[in-house]
Amino acid sequence: MARPSRSEFDAKIRRLLDRLRSDIREGRLQHGDYLPSEVELGRRYGLSKESVRKALDRLVGEGLIVKIRRVGNRVDRPEPGAGTESSETAGDTGNGNDATNLGRGDFGQAEAVRGREAGRERGSGTMADGSRAAGAAERDRVLVRVAYYPSLREEAMMERAAAAFEAAHPGIAVKLMPTPFPLDYAEHCMADVIALTAWDALKMRERDPALPLLANAPPTDYANALLAEPFRTPQGRMAAAPYVHSPVVLCYNREHFAASSLKEPEEGWTWYTLLKSARTLAKRSGVCPFAAHMQSVNRWPVFLLQNGFRFGTENGRRASENPAFWESLRVARDLVRSQESSVRLWTENDADVERWFREERTSMIMTTYYGLNRLSGTNLDYGVTPLPALRTDATLLLATGLAVVRQAAWPEAARSFVRYLCGEAWQTELRRRTLTLPAHPGAMAVRQELEGNRPSRDPDGSAWWDRCKLYSDLQLGTEELEAVREELKAYWSMLEDEAEASERLELLFVGKDE
Image (cartoon, rainbow, N blue to C red; front, side, top):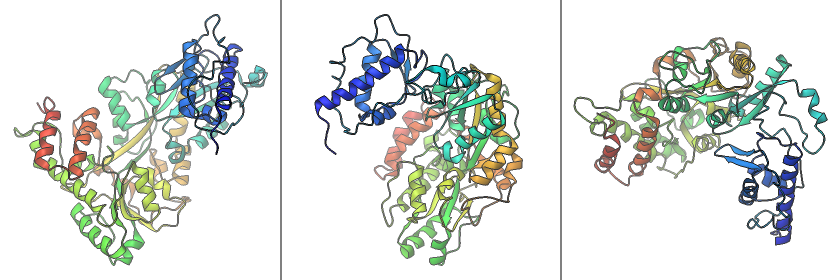
């Protein structure tokens, strides 16, 4: 596609800025509203994200909007005389990359995240270029703003959940806001309910164990007390209700094992058993025998947990001097090397590994029941089993909860939303339509009318709990765990040996082990 001329590019910038100024001055975008994302604005006006960002900097300079880090661009109160810049100079913001002009478009209160007046409008209307009359019928509805991780759209059917809740509560509307950073939305009073992983909850507790940003979670049922532990304060207060969960598991292609005349993985396997089978699979099948996104904080800590390792001084030895520490990392390194035995695989995230398994390019993967949703629409014959063991058969429990923000505009409506999604009826729907494991014990027990391609061999979920461990069992903070991971990349890549890696890790552990 041809690159737009300078005049065409300037015209797009003018249309973008003129429309935003008009919507702000005339009240279609009000103080506290958030603009559509820079990506969406670029799509509508045929501009690159960088060009949109430079254009919006002009509105910042005019006092019309303010940039909120990792959240978006919020409408500010316009100062007298604001928004009067000549449109002849408005386009001087850089060079454009995209040629397609997608038209003026409407900014819509569907995408304006309501700050000051969160409870007055539904947030899912379509008006921004006409009168406000179209939204008058909705104005008395209570609005619950929900910030959640984008992966939950598929893994927890968030759109279907919101629709079901609205049908059961006609006076309440739900505004869904997918974001990698739900906590940021809570901190800026942009959300009433947030999804919260065990990892993010641990980060919050490290800043303030009392979790003051979050209100008391409404009482809900959950299958095991361990599901609640990541969201409990030292005083015993529940700051989030358990919603969904998964242990880290081993998933394998049954046809690959049958074709190689190998016994399928089962309880009692060790990682050394897996490595032996991996060598046979590599020779006989020609595919990668095992894959894992090892540098993920949801993967490599498993090996430390299986060796009963805890960060800290033990018998006068520092962590970097502990044989259990290095045995754990050595096994992880051997598994990384097994990924390169036949073909070299590079992973950016866990989804890469799950995609390769779906395409039958690898025989075994470390994954979760969240990830198994990517296999739901396939015809693969696959099985799931607990992870192989080192000294123990421990696994890492990943849990996600729903939390009510303390400054929620409509706290009781927010609590109702959490109760509904964590209740048995919706949790059973989640169980039947996805491979994600619900928190509710009644839903967990459902075995009939399950949709999608599910594992041919699947262990009883009630048997997991004795194996499950949490990040906190390692007794090291999230920042330190991430720092250890960064230092270990060279070791896992065979660029340095244990002695060299130990020297650099020692610098991290100074003051942590004592």
